[in-house]
Length: 261
Ligand SMILES: Cc1cc2nc3c(=O)[nH]c(=O)nc-3n(C[C@H](O)[C@H](O)[C@H](O)COP(=O)(O)O)c2cc1C
Ligand code: SF4
Ligand code: SF4
Image (cartoon, rainbow, N blue to C red; front, top):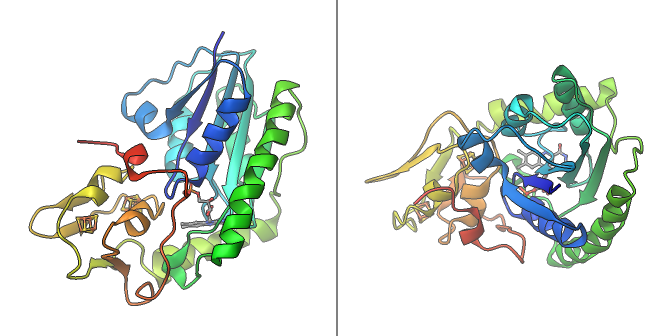
């Protein structure tokens, strides 16, 4: 039976990790979580099931919650997750396990890979070029180790913690993103925007429309794909992102993220 690996990504880190991992695991097929959700392909027949996602405010992205809540996995499938993060995995794996439990499944293993950060909308910056390079290179070795542990069906303690401190940190981060820095309500475009429409095509939530101007709706996942991938660096959040570097994983191309024509 096949092994299935899903990914959700904004700036490509989680897709790159999914690709490294699939290359190390036999008979493993990769799918975009967005496509699976959109096509409601929730019955997954597989020997092992994995999901790679970016940590968002100490937790898993809301779309990943929605997807996992609907999945129907075989009772004997080995289930694992890989969180890509910028230093703090938080309680993400504990959330996944809680959701899986509702459908009578468990998360057998919750791994983590340190990757370059991308959270520029709250005044944080991306990593230096040197640190970005170091993390990207180190990730491949880290994934090789994870692959070995998956192949031996290990069930180690989850990376991260579900402590009260992590929950409070997650709430504080969410407050900063949604209320203080008002993502995506404060997104706007400079006159560098040529209305090419790429941001709308890569948005996982179909939350962007491009006609005479670029407009954002309310269903934002805060993945920051639009802001980082705009080829003209035209998208800003307030004024705070004007001088911030943009980032995407060096092995991933914008074509890899196209969700619609
Ligand atoms: C809104 C937002 C919140 C984030 N929260 C966290 C966090 O709580 N802990 C952490 O380590 N990284 C956090 N990050 C960083 C991403 O998880 C990390 O850069 C990830 O590898 C991005 O993956 P992607 O390129 O697949 O989107 C956050 C990023 C964003 C945009
Ligand atoms: S990707 Fe950038 S340039 Fe293209 S429509 Fe969106 S904001 Fe404008
Ligand atoms: S609007 Fe931008 S940040 Fe929000 S989900 Fe779409 S691509 Fe991601």
